[in-house]
Structure formats: structure tokens, C-alpha cells
Length: 243
Image (cartoon, rainbow, N blue to C red; front, side, top):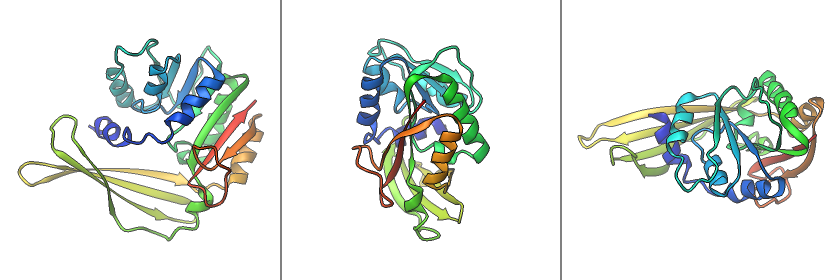
């Protein structure tokens, strides 16, 4: 049931979509999205007319995405089950994107492997765009937060309310986020699903060094999806990388 709840929750976030669509308008077809999940970003790109390839290691997420491909899409996305650090495709792409804060959840070795795959699949002069939470901001937060109600939506199958609460815990090296999906049942009981994400608090300097070591280079840095300059207080770290 996770893909349905994940999509119902995260598909309500639209702030970054104009940014990815603008990059696609600049770069052209085809677009490769790494970690495409349930298609929150991939589907709008396909609806806009771009040829897309979505890659994810979670078959349940890809199955859910496939069921959401509607008739308004001219070119159905090509969906592939693979690890973002081990894929090997026959095509190169003018634009490869890694949205949704996935990059900072990768271990050191996994991140290096991902960058090697990006280098092989990025067309000469292409763009690799990645966003993650600003580690410079997260490292200054308190050690932990209280659990807070974040959102509420209607369960896509039962029609019952689902409340989403979240909390986080910071260590010297990681930022651990916990989401609780509480399905409120008619008999007064609660069916809870808990999801965790662990972000590495890797400094910007290290990300840049890893990118350069892989044979790529950082072209631009942004702190938000309006392309504002990156600062230590920015909500995001967005890197545009080229070969």
C-alpha cells in the first residue's frame, strides 16, 4: 500500500515542477529521471510532450506509475527497474534529473557509482540536475524535533482520512526523517505505516569533489527552485552538472 499513500502525499507538492519542465525545455528529448518513484515529476514531463525514461529499483512504485499513465500522454514513459548506481542503457540523454532529495540518501560508494553511470549516459554538453536538502542548514538544527502533524488526505482506496505526521533526528553525520501515515478507520482504530529516510550530511565541498572526480563539473548552484543563489540558509541545494 506504500506506493498509493506515498503518491497521495507527495503528489500534492508542486513547487519544483516548473523548474524541471524549464530544464527539459532547454535540453530537449529524451529526459532520464533517476529514482522516478510513482511519477510525481515524470508524469508532468510526459504530459508536456517530452520523451521520458523513468528508472527506479522499486517495482511496486513502477507498477503504480504505469497504472497512472493516462491517454493525454503522447509518448508513454519507458519504465525500467534498476539501481541508480548500476544501470546500463543503450542511449545517452541531454538531460538526466535526480529530484526528490534522493541523492543525499545515497552512501559514499553508491553516490560515486551513480555519478559514474551519469557520466556514461549523459550526452556531450548535457545537463545532470540534482536537488537535495541543504546540508549547511540541516547541520545547524537541533538534535531532534517533536512529532508534528504535517498533512491530511483521503485514502485513495477506502475514502477514509489519512493523517501524516513527521519528526526528525540529527546526528553529526546524518539527518533521519520519520513519516507516520495514520489511516483512520471507521471503528476508531488507526492503521499506521512508518517510513524512514536517512540523509547524509555531506558538505557541499565534498559533493563538488565527488562530481569532479567522476569526470563531471558543477555548472550552476541554486538554493531554491526559483534559481536564487545558494547560501547557507537556502532550503535546498540544487546542482546543475555537465560533462
